[in-house]
Length: 89
Figure (cartoon, helix red, strand yellow):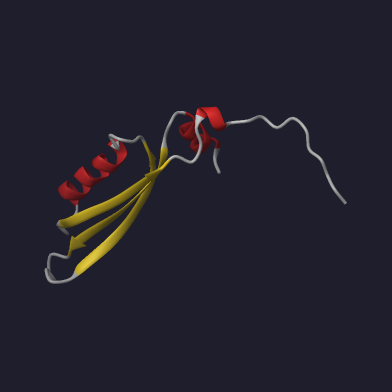
């Protein structure tokens, strides 16, 4: 895990995973899916909505629906500094 990710988690970010369902322009009867994952802030999800806006502006495949989940992996109250290590044979 990168230091940047740890810093984001300590600032309240959590891992957001979204599954975007879309149709190809030439095959409207076929539903495809795309998985997107990024650290984001709940409940507003600014990065997710920015990506959805980008998709709608730049990608030819129109969105059918979006399903997403958000999970905080660590919080400021859960961080502990370990100062000792015990090794057992």
